[in-house]
Length: 505
Image 1 (cartoon, rainbow, N blue to C red):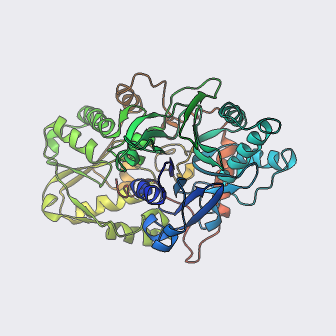
Image 2: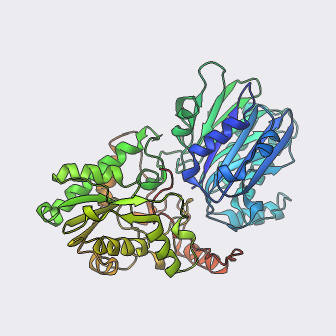
Image 3: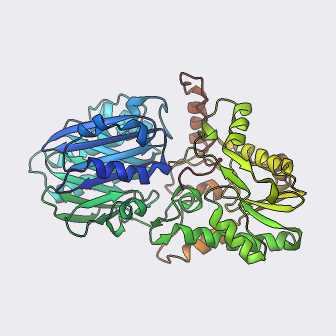
């Protein structure tokens, strides 16, 4: 999960990319980077931190050019604390290529060996993005060896990339002197769309439609699974399907949690998808317990709000805001230990006592991953005076790790792994626990775009769509986490992703 953007324009693009990254900040808060090109020369600045902290006036002035890329990073592979692994990445041959990537390559280790032994390319970091840019560079070099580089040659190179790499990837790249290239994995797991400015002919490619709309661009369409688009330096647009058997199966967690509610991904309003999930969650609740036992429905900020509102409407109970969120406290999943993490939850959320006192409250969250935050929030509700505390998850039980770009805990850390519903309920301390149904969730989201051929929902159903993931891979992920270094403050590398509410959603 990262946010990426690329722009080609008649005007300087540094401020425009900065503005787009602010709109994508919810997709990554660990690092940010921008690269621009003037002629064939690259200008780059990247560092750890939020967009507003990474870029100062002096940095922006040092980014001239009318074409550029940007990324906000959420690390799922490599060293989270290494500034050199912030994106964009650059290779000087052929031509000079810079690239940003959202996703995760599941065969990165094997590709790294191929690059060294066969392609004679050296990888200097643990980032799979460095692997990806070198694969792309090698394939472009192959097609441009005897002929001038053309859009057809670029698409041939992307087709070769599709054949070599596995996993999820949405990519935007600049080829010095030629133009802007964007492509998406054959399953469309990670999102990518593009739009145009009404008057200037400017083209923007971004992870979410909100980045286009918020910067004055008209949304044109999503990049199709397996498709590549290329905009040359004269502004001419080219597109071609480069995968042999593409299918549209986007990541379900985009609709559950990751994307902003005002985005539209693959023809589906994220907001409407969450409303629909709230409706099916209400049906699940009604079949589990009498709604008359509930006095009030309260969301856990922020991405659970649409589901909670729809659920409350469906069961005829009042919807209330019972927690106030402090946006200036760091995410709980980067805290060093359990006691500090609990303290951070208390700093981040504060209960409004009047909404809890003497009431039976139903708390609605977007998902329950590890359960530690849910346990603390249930306790906060009790301390605020709730008579009974029920918990509902707008997502089904998270039972399996995600390997396609969401940094989830290992399987043993997932609260729903090898535990019954009653065991989970007892752990978090709720009086009742209701989960979304997997099939119902898929059905109501797919209904918003019948052209969808499925979903990447492996963390719920254990089905890994690329077909190359095994239990041995999970063992490798677990070993990698155990060996990750700590940062200068001793912060634990294990990131309890998706537990504490989405920043800026």
